[in-house]
Length: 478
Image: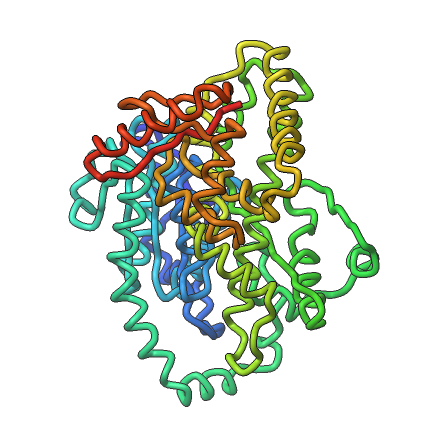
């Protein structure tokens, strides 16, 4: 950070004194801050500056999501994207920002002292320039006296999010009031020279996704991707993948026939994914898992995007039957469709890690084959008795293993099944897809037709003993 302004390295007090008298800093009347600060270029919009922690933790990634999705523009100083920025960069970014967030590491992290020293220095600049400042630190961390009253320590990522929300909510209200002063903004903009208004862009396109299309210059790669049906841009960080990505989104969105879904997850700790893939499973099983994981994430992101677009249309446009069905489906399953992309990824990984690993590749393969066989058998045995059997079975895809009679009736209603609900329930039990509860937490499947009446009687008796008075069923795991 200080390499561009000069410094003296010192390991003891004697070297500090010698360096001081050798450089004669007291004889220099210039002010370093004034030299570095470019006051000519005033900010044109409210911006929040976030200095991300040196190590990408769950808390720092969640904060990145909050900053990016905040109601004002953001600049993220991410060590993973750009390891070192000069002092002038920090001085001018702090001065032009509306607010600053600094995220310190705990003493348990490696290289925490050097990282936190930079964070504290920038926080000091923000405090000196009168900027709203939030200093966060991972637990455990003992704060020095000079910023002890400013620092907030969080034990969990959720606590870090809460601290940010509590700090940002009143701040955004103040910023909105400032934005209402349109005349001041207009005068400020017109006072700038034409040269100063030229925007050459930042070194990292992710930091200004809303402005990159304004100065983007079409390239051969961009033109080829625009014409192609499928395109994959591959390259290291900083080679220019993100800028055409945003420009393509902007250009394709101009055609009302297109629905463009922008999927750009923020950097995420992949420890859970690696842990999941390190389980004992074959290459084909691992590939199947990755493919299924991405299908789920992309499909739900597309559904989430369509939901937003449909609801944003004026009421007088009306909605097609397909749009109404989609909205109804999403609203019935908001818990696993509507959360932000990275949160869905975390949730899926957590749930998959809780599942027992297959004891062997062969048993895993047999389990998949049996599941396909069971589904095909259900379809064959149905033989047209329930017209919308596929839509009905889809309702069970994310349901718990044990369900009540009320759950069943809700699934039947959602699938718009025309047959009588009681007949549908009996039919699913006859197919051994559902097993009624015959005693407390004991479920039996009707594999034998001779025992059907007996099991039904036991199920009715069990329901009567249930405090709620409802029959319960277990979905056949096979």
